[in-house]
Image 1 (tube, one colour):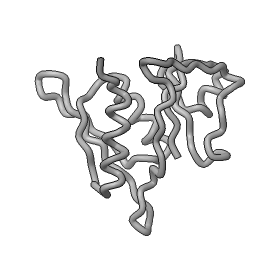
Image 2 (cartoon, one colour):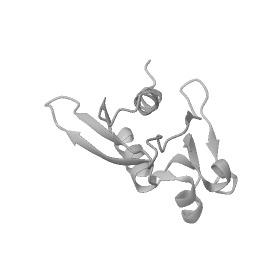
Image 3 (cartoon, rainbow, N blue to C red):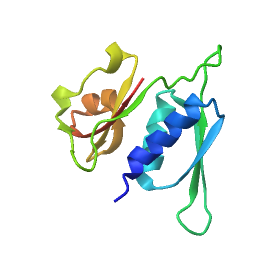
Image 4 (cartoon, helix red, strand yellow):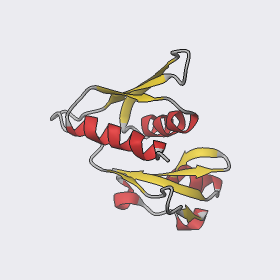
Amino acid sequence: MIDTVGDFLTRIRNASEAKHLKVDVASSGMRKNIAEVLKKEGFIRNYKVVADGRQGMMRVYLKYDAKGEPVIKNLRRMSRPGRRYYVGSDKIEKVRSGYGIAVLSTNKGILSGNEAEKQKVGGEYLLKVW
């Protein structure tokens, strides 16, 4: 079984390290929602979904600072298929003292850790990024 979220994160991590402007990945609902959170929190410039008659492709536009360094310094998968990791709303960690974000899958959708805390919902701790 393929870990689609892990594959998505690895592609973004590799493209970012190689200083690519964009990366193409197969589209899915969860990947779109994760990309939306990353865009909202300022870790990627944008993303676009292109329908191809099958699953669809998603193009993620990466973001770099003024010196040309990637905005995404590290991207770590927390919950994985062999070991699911759940947290309550009161146990969501502050990633790098607030410089990074946690991304959770909750019953209200895919949310950043800050948003999940505000809405007082916990869920599956998908990843952290800084």
